[in-house]
Amino acid sequence: MPWFPAWGISFGEAMIEPSEVVALFREWRPSERWLLLAYDAACSEFRLWTAWAALRRLEESGRMVARTCDAEFLRLISGTHQLSSAFERAGISSGDQSAWIIHLPETVVGEEFGRTKVLRTSYLDDEIEATRLIEHLGARLLARRPIPSEAGLLRLGVIEIGDSIEEARQEDAFVLHTALADM
Image (cartoon, rainbow, N blue to C red; front, top):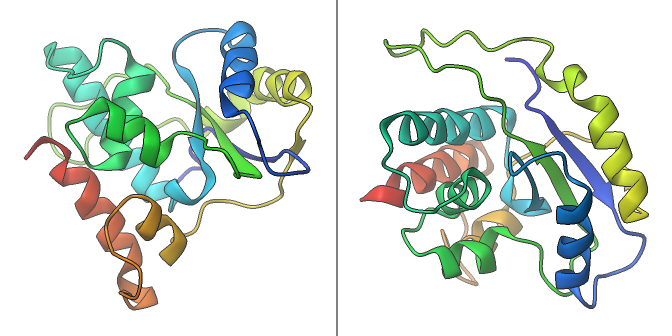
């Protein structure tokens, strides 16, 4: 599976006013197809591509809950129908030190299951724009890709404090949580 166009970034210290970071990001992003995602919410390449495919289907059918694709993607990642909950769960928050810069490609989703052609260059095609955003935010690129974590499951409300899901099943729990966003 190709890398999803997502760049892990570190702010050096915990954010106090995430709204300032979001405002700066929105000022410099090329389009609404770019967003900031809470670091622990990403989970994996598979999960990001799955949420993206759901987003593209909703966009193409005109059935998005949110008015913009960036907010809709956060809603799907959060596994909720409520936009305010989506921003609380999957958006950056006070105390966060890391995040993901995400680009949502406009590739057409295939008609049949598993028939979407995902470009292997999706990540590299947007690297210059991502680097520019990282510089404007005063952040640094993290040499990591998304991995499932209990911290992410807690943040998204999949599990509660004290609960756990075995490591081998965590990605499944994230993907199922995304699938339940419209149920």
